[in-house]
Image (cartoon, rainbow, N blue to C red; front, top):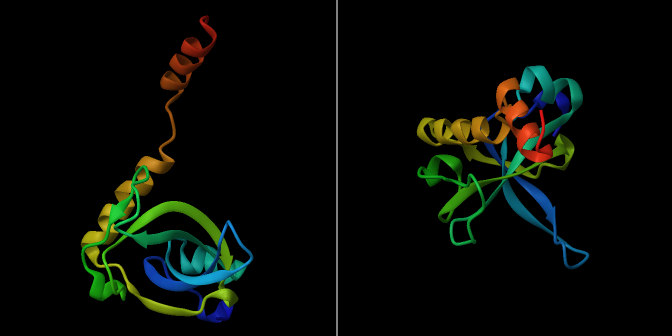
Length: 133
């Protein structure tokens, strides 16, 4: 995949994932999160989230995918917020795209994941941690 064919946000792609316990890789689905024009095309990379089987043990903020056909997925799956950046040349194919309802749920999950603390809550955290202001 070349930078002039930049991936678009919300596409489901097939990428090589390494196994943590052995020297091997396996193709797995992932969700493109970054913007094609603002990041993917200029950098040649894309920010992605892992997609895993719905049967796997839960992780914080997992987002179940309801429209599997549109996403190009063969089995019940969920977006897992294990984020990574990947050179687009390593992408092995586009499987599909998230349906609007699935995209909306993932957007909410991302907002929760990346929510910045307000200065007031940061001050409260600092006070709780140190015992003083």
